[in-house]
Length: 130
Image 1 (cartoon, one colour):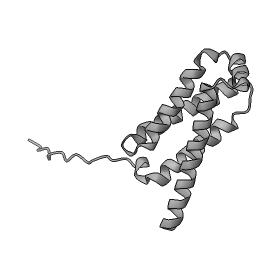
Image 2 (cartoon, rainbow, N blue to C red):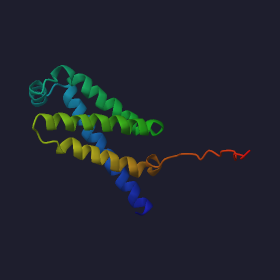
Image 3 (cartoon, rainbow, N blue to C red):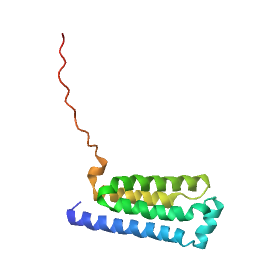
Image 4 (tube, helix red, strand yellow):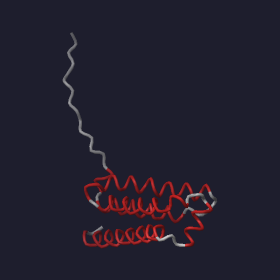
């Protein structure tokens, strides 16, 4: 992918992720009636504010370059948990799976090195056969 195209795609995906997660978190923090109904049915209403705040914190961690790896891990856990809750209640888990896919694609476009192991070879002294 050409550099200019990559920058445009990366910015567009980053903006989309920000929009989706901020809207989701805001809806939770504002106690939108549809979410209150859903969270009541699944028994998580008492956690709705905490989940909204967590989304914003995890997104912020992901967007800051120095903590991007940690943010990716936290967002993966969050949306993986959302998928598990959706599946355990017989609802459609495609929404959190799609968001998580977009996050991983964006993370790769932002920094390919995040997915490469940085192992350093340790030189061992030769052993003598005495």
